[in-house]
Length: 592
Image 1 (tube, helix red, strand yellow):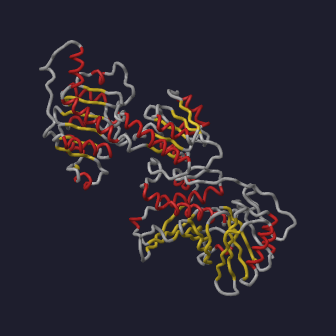
Image 2: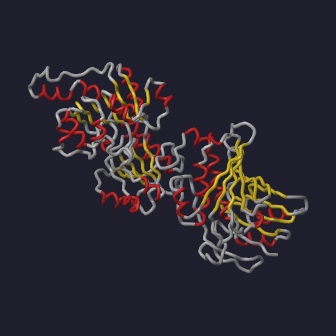
Image 3: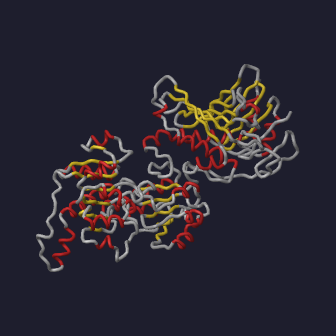
C-alpha cells in the first residue's frame, strides 16, 4: 500500500530538489531532510541572543534603561550616512529622531537584519517608508508623548509673536528701550486657522479657544463631529487661509503638503496675517515666505522647524526682523522627552518580541484594543496559511487563495487586513527564503503573483466574538494529501479559536477538532477499530508524546481522517511505520 509523506515544511517534487522529497512506503531507506528550528513571531523572529539596538540621536535615560533590559544598546551619535550604513548590518533595530536620514541605502546595507525603525517623535519624513516596507522593516513612532509639549510650544510662539517678545527681549539686552516699536496685537476675538486637526492641532485649538480666539480648521481627514465637540468648524483650505488672522500649521510633510504654503497660497491670505509653524519645515516655501514678509502680506512668522535643519547661519528667513525662530523645540520639555523615550523604547522592544504594534506607521493601523481582541485569530490565520501551503504538492504553483471569514459582526465592524497579512505570511514563508511580516506581506504577495480574495459570511448570533471561523482555500493545485481537497476541488483548511487557542476544525470535507500547536500528522484511513491504538502505541514506542487526537469521518466504517498532535518531531522510521500501518491509505506530517 502506497502512502505519501511530507516532512517539516518541505514541498514534495523531484522538480524542486532543495524543497522536495517524494517516496512511497514501504522503503528500505529514506533520504535525509533539512530540519529547521525557526519559530516565527508575528513581526519578528525570536532570537537566542540579545538583539542590538542602535540609537543615533539622544534619547531620554528612562527609554535607554528599558532598552538595556532587553537588548544590547549602541548609542552612536552624529553618524555620517556612510558610517550608518556600515554599522546597520550589525543591528536589529534603529532609533532616530528627526536628524538621521534613514534612506534606501540603509535598508540595503542591513542585509535583512534590520527589523524595526523607531522614530522618537511623530514625523517620519526622514525615513524611506517604501524601502522599509519592501525590506520587511517595521517603522514605529511615538505619536502621543510629545503632543501636549508641541501644542504648548505652538501657543507659546503664537503669543510671543503677537507681542514681539523675542525682538523686544533682544532690544532691551542691546541697551535699547523701544516701547513704541513693539506694540503688539491682541488674540481675543481673532480668528485662528489650525491647518491639520490631528493630535497636536486639536490641542492647540483647545488652548486657543481658552484665549478667546475664534478657531477654524482645515483637515480633509478629520471627522466634523470631533471638531464640533470643541467648538471648531472645519472649512476648506482656501476659506481657512483667506479668513484667518493667525495660521498655525500642524500637518505632516507628504508629497501633497510639500511647499503647500507658496506664493499662490500667500496671495490668498489677509494682509497682515501671522503664521506659526511647529509641524515640518518643508510645508512652507521659505523663499515665498520671505517675499510675503517683505511685502507685508505676512506681518510676522514664528517658526520652530525649517526645510534644512539647522538652517544656514546667514539664512534670510531666520535673520528677518519679523521672524521668531526656535531650534525645533516642539517636543523639548523634560516631561515630553521622558515620555517619548519610554514610548518609543516600549514600541521597539515590543516589535522585537514579535508583539503587534499599535503605533506602526507602515503596517495596518489597528487600535490597541482591536489588536488585543484579534491576537488569537492572528495566530490562527498564520497557522492555517502554513498548513494549507504544506498540503500543496511540489511543482504546483500557488497563485490563488480564497479566505472566508464567518462572523456575527457586520463587515464594517471587522477589519481583516491584519488577518490577511498573517495568512500571506503563513503561505509564503514555508516555501521561500523570504521573511514575511505584517509590514511587507501585501508587497511580497503581489511580487510573487499571489492573489488573495476574501469572502465574509454574516452569521446570526452575538457579535461578542470577532470571528467564528476562518477558512483558507488554495485553488488550481494538486495536494500531497488527497483528503485535503474539498468537494469543490480546492485544498481547504478551516479553524476557529477555542479557549483562546487556535484549533483546526476542517480538512477538505472532513470535520476535525485539534489544537494547532506543535506538529500534526494527518492520516486517511479506513474507519475500523484499533487504528487509533496502533498509531498511538507506535508513537509511544518512539517516545513521541501525543497531545491530542481527533477523528473525522463521513460515515461509519467508511473513510476517516485522523489528526494527531505531537510535541516532538517523529523520526523517519516512525513516519515510515505509520505509513505501513494497515488501513492507513495516506498520511502527511505538517510542521507548525
